[in-house]
Length: 181
Image (cartoon, rainbow, N blue to C red; front, side, top):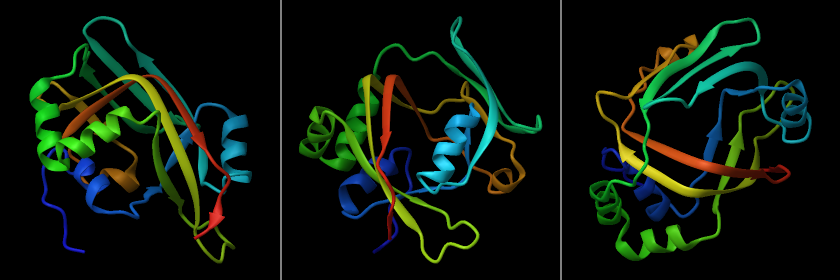
C-alpha cells in the first residue's frame, strides 16, 4: 500500500485504512521478574527486567525507566492532561472519518494484534491478539512542554520525535496466547 501521510495522528488513520494492521513488540521491559518470565515463556516476547519511576504529583508527570543494570532506557516529563482537547478529536475525526472515530470510542476495548520479534531458534514470528480498555482516554498533540527522550542506544539512534501524547487511566491490558504468523 502507499505510505500514510505523515501527521501527528497518523496512527489513528492507519487503524482505519490498514485492515490487517499489526504492532511489533520490539524492546519490552517489565518491572518484575515474574512478568518478564511470563512474557518470555508464555507469550514468546523478548522481555527484560526494568526499574521504573513515575511521579504523578503536581502539574507534570515525570518518569524514568532503567534496565536491570541501571542503564537509562527513557526519561522525561509531560504536563498533566485533565481534559480532552476538542481540536485534537476533530483532527482525528477528519483523518479517520466521524463514523470510524465513534466506532472506536464506543468499543468496549481496543483490539490489535502484536507481532513478536524472533528469538534465537525460532523458525517464524508469532502474533498475540491484545485487548486494551481504560477509563477516559485522553489524546492530545505534543507540545514543546512534552519532554520525552529515548536513551537506550538501539532506539536512541532512530531519533524518535513525539507527535502526540496519550493518557490511559485505569488501563487493563490482555495478551492472548501467541500463534505462528
